[in-house]
Image (cartoon, rainbow, N blue to C red):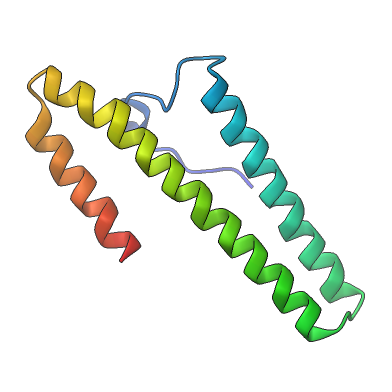
Amino acid sequence: MKSKTTKKSQSKKSLAPEGAPEKEAYVRRARRIEGQVQAISRMIEEERYCVDILMQVRAARSALKSLSIELLESHTNHCVREAFQSNNGEKTIQELLEVFKTYS
């Protein structure tokens, strides 16, 4: 599935420098979650027991939540801090508040 990237998101700072350990860890986790979701699809196709499928859905949701929290922490510790150091903090706070609204 291709993602739709806007000009706005392309101009933002990236999560981590190319080859950074954090980036590689995030990619590994996302791929593991992708595998979990594919397994759920297979379980449905194989008409597995509903409770077993639901348990896998719960595990995938938990993994996504955990990843999103780590990404938010990384964003706050790197991008937001950098924005304040370059006197661009107010705009970044507004952006961060919008992100919080989507998670509440």
